[in-house]
Length: 361
Image (spheres, rainbow, N blue to C red):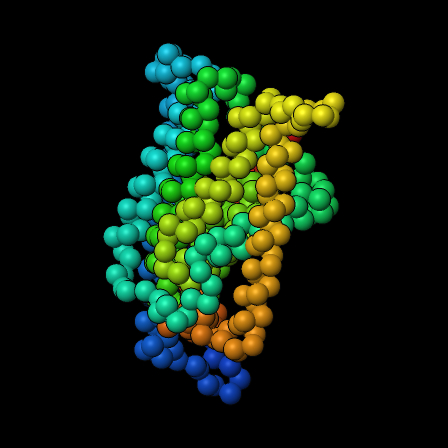
């Protein structure tokens, strides 16, 4: 029965899910024929779907395999380390062995072009851009944590799934920063900005930013991080296209993760305030520093917006560049079965991960 059903379904989908070539003529007996350009466009986008789908399967598959191997054998392989060190080393290995193969696979298919931006189009310096971005990120986190997450019942913290109980020694502190801040900042930016954005760029800057951001959100595989990662993906993708400098997004990514890592490492450290009968924790000092950075970033951001509005140069920004695809052509991604399978796989794993996190949280 199953082979018969498969054979029938294969016949139905032989020409692709969105190919309406066998549709019956309309009442006026006029049949619209696809132009050679639209046929080429469909095949080109299907090819893109294959590349994206395969890279997702490589990433997710390696994550599952490496995590399973380390869960079974990390106590034997890493017996010289404490529980937190084992957890962090496992995180580093899982990221390295899942992201790098997917990155290298995508780079094989990426068209090499010079996307360098003229200095005349850089209306804000790179240090100012970093401050503006940091301000946006932390204002976004405040809105999400106070409004959006409570509204949808997202009350768990993904970090609670990690063993962070033994961080007293310098090696453990270093491994926490390496696993939670340095490695993700480098590898995730290489995959989602350098690889995916460069791959999508010939199809249009907006498409490159939005689609890479969607993948960045989905591949976090939980609602708590998905929403934030999607918006971060929009911001980081725009910055990368604006500057063509991956080091900027890596640095901002590191600042975001690094501050959270420092708060974890020094959560028990207190400072005595002279003349006051009170102790201040690191979290309070970090909050003060962030408030100062956010204020500077807001001021710089407002100046940037005013300057662009006065000069009416919004359409000259690199992110406004048009691509070669017609509107709506992204639907042809779903004509590739590998892409379809990868998206279904992501959704299933996301549902499982979300249920586990809800149960733990």
